[in-house]
Length: 491
Image (cartoon, rainbow, N blue to C red):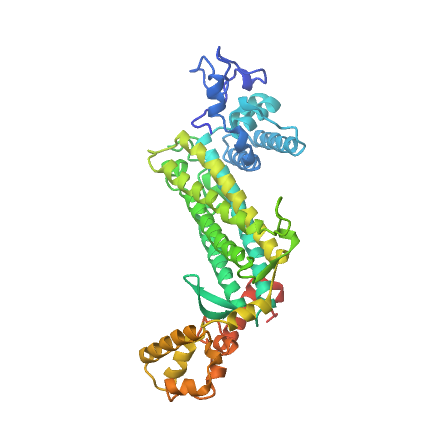
């Protein structure tokens, strides 16, 4: 994106006539009279950002309207001129809405495209809009306005995703699922507790994005190219009109700060980390080996060769797309790490990374929400069979002995040996007759069978934050009130 540009010269774009072109074919009219020739055509293409920063058109118009109004109120231009500039800018907005505003490569970037069109419509008056600002602070303002809106959209998408998980959790609040560590059976947990863990992750994502938004919402407009301006502008007026919380205190920092872009991409990367982790679980759950969920036709495809296949495309794509966002984060960090103050053309590279990062994040959130809304069905019978056919209740045998005065480490060793014996004999703990239990330790009684039943194993985890049914129901209620505010009782 172009930087350090003055208002267009009177040649070419300023008069509405074809811009001056040098012998190599590039545009010269967008710059000062210091330039005699235009850019080489290949360099013109290489230099231009209009192909992607046109996405900032509405934000550029919003910022320009606020700037024009401020210039009028500060007496830099007359109130009538300010009104005419605003009317001209709104005319460009209307043209864009009708599909009539389609600047080409010669516009270089969205900022010059708007200004050139304004001059074509208003004549010399259009040249006054750029007073007191540079494309350096202008692009920074546009990008922050755009990203602020996108953060709000991602927050809404996260809330939808959470609601989809919450609905599944409430539907399966009494269903158990094997809990794993190291991808080995560990202890049974409530399925709702498992899904609530991802809601907690999404809540942290939303909190991080809200924190990023506060730093996005600082206005650089009026910092000009790098040093401020002698024009008597009111930076706080434009900042307030555009909904910013405050302004940058240092003009050099204002035009060169891209920390907010890195912070956003880091927060977006964590969103994708969480979606990718859940995706991996769904892929495993949908396999024949697990069989914990069945994929519906709404979110799965088949094989071009094997007619029996039903593939988990959605979670696989989400798992793969996460790498794009991670790559953008590393790209942004690398782009800014060696830049001296203040503005550098390198900053043009932040746009495509942010645009794609936002789009990928939104697409993945929508896809995962749909997957849990209508793309999969849990199989409670298969889950019940899974938690009943392993040794994930071994810890509860040790806890049983501890409750009867046996030191935990002693109980731990006894149960470890018992599990080894059961594996050799091909039996489960539930299948052992009571004399075998009592031979292991006299503290065992016939209530051991109830104590190691899967539902009792889960119910016993009553510690705050645990998987016990009462704790899970309490957390479901908290999330229900947070995510479904219409269900809140009126005090």
